[in-house]
Structures are given as C-alpha cells and as structure tokens.
Length: 156
Image 1 (cartoon, helix red, strand yellow):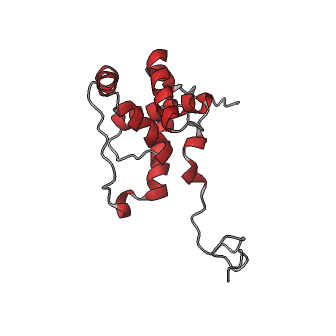
Image 2 (cartoon, helix red, strand yellow):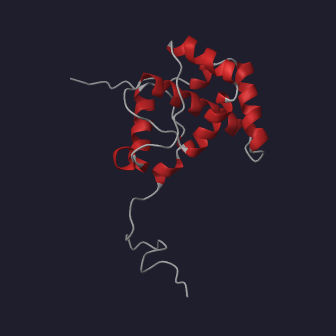
C-alpha cells in the first residue's frame, strides 16, 4: 500500500486587497523606509495581510513582528480602506491593541511562534524574512562564540 501525502496549497495574502491599495501601502511604507525595495515591501504587505487575517480568525492572542507591525500601521493610517477591508473580509473590525500583553503568558518568541503557526494553519504563505526573531537562539550560555560565552569576543 502506498500512502500519498499532498501538501496543502498556500494562499498569497496579497490577493486579499486590490493592486491599487497594495501599491498605496507599498508607497507609504517605502516613504518611511526608503531602503526597502519595492519587491520586499510588496512581500511585507502580504505578510501583514496574512497576520491580520489569521488574527481575525484566531481566538488566541497573536503578535506581529516589528517589521510586520510597520506594514500594519501603514494600513491603519488609511482608516477608511482598513475599515472597509476588515468589514468585507472578516465581517468585523480587527483592532490593533499594542503592547500591554502579560509577557509571562504572551511573551516573545513563544508568541511569535504561535502567530506563524496560526498563519500557516490558516493557509497563508509565510515569508520568514519578516519574522526574524524566530531564528534567534534561546540560550545565554551555549559556548558557541556568543557574546556572553567563554568562547565569545573578549572586552576589556
């Protein structure tokens, strides 16, 4: 007996908004961060939309990466477009509630891991360049040359 495993196709969240609105958001973010290429800004809009869509459908607290949050802020500043998007796509407004999470319950890397898991389970493409803190080690004494390791750089 042969078992076939099919990978589930992912959705590019950029398709959730019009190309005109996408271009507006790309321009807004690039206006504040001119070092961003247009291509990376396009991908960032997609990651923000995937995050907002996953948040709208999740009963758990999720948190964007700082970079994804920059894209969300750009969308929030276009209040009518953001409100219309939320109402049309989710049937309700998705609020941005920054900062006041209990770190012991919703802290750091664990929360971001949950966030990317929920985005993935919702079927959206994930671009790990926009979630860089998930690539950081959770160690303080790995002795692999880190700054606080005995093998790390010496400072006098």
